[in-house]
Image 1: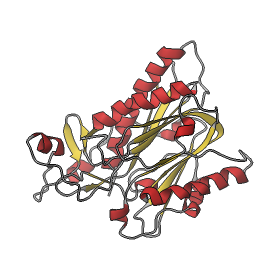
Image 2 (image 1 turned 90 degrees about the vertical axis):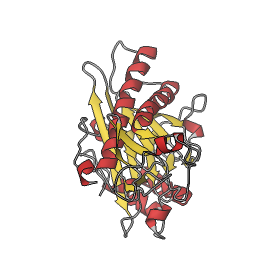
Image 3 (image 1 turned 90 degrees about the horizontal axis):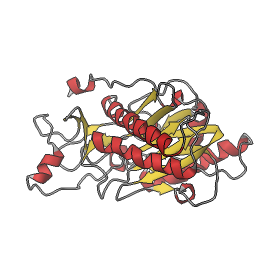
Length: 312
C-alpha cells in the first residue's frame, strides 16, 4: 500500500489561492473526527449540488436559485454524521462576534465517520469555533486533518483504506482562479489515470475493484456504511447564484472521474460553490460558467486524489 501513498497529484496550491478565502481545521482529542471551516469575511455568492442518496446537510435550500440573495460568510464541513451539524453554531458565533453579520447563514455538510471515531464525541460548536480561530490564508494542510480526520474509502467489499482532506487550485491564464477542497470519505474506490490508488483491499493487500465486483454479479454489501464525499469549489469569478449552482453541478464531473462507484444510495455527496467576484473580464454568462465549471471539475478531481493519498 505504501507505494500508492507516494504518488503525487499534478495540481499545486489549494483553496486559499482564491483571495478572500480562509481555511481552518480542528480535530477531536482522539484525532478520530473533526471539522473544517471555510470563511470568506467579505462575503461570497453561494451555490450547491447535492448528488448523493443519503445527504447530511444544513441550509442548502437557501442557497439554491430562486431564493433570497443572502451572501455567505462561512461554511462548515464536519465529521460526526448528523450529530455534527449543530457544530455550525460555532461558525455563526465567530461571524457575529466580529460584526460581519447579525444572523449569518452557515451551510454545512457532514461525513459519516462514526465507526472510525469509535465512540468519540462528534464535533461540537466549540470545536468549530476553534477551527474558525485557526483559519488563515496560508497553505491548507492535507490528509487526516479537520473533517478528514476520520475519513476512509472503499467500503462495499473487502477492507477500507484511510482517506482524508485534499485541496488544489488552478489559475487560468487571463482568467479567474478556481480552487477546490474535498473531504474524501466515499463508499467507492479512488481512481487516478485508469487505476485504483486508494480503496477496498483484499486480504492479500490487492485492490478489490468494487465496480468490477458488482458488474460480475457480486451482491453489494454495506456492513461499513460510513460514507460521503463533501467539497467546496471557490473562484474569483463574478457569478450569480444560479450560475454558482450550475458550477457546483459541473464540478460533479471531477468527483465522478475520481471515485467509482460514486453518488450511491449510501453516499451523501455534496459540493458547495463560493464565487467571490474579484475577477472581472469581458467573459460572462454561459461562456464564463462553462470555463469555471470545467476548471472546478479538474481541481476537485485533483483534490479528491490528493486527500486520499495524503492520508496516514
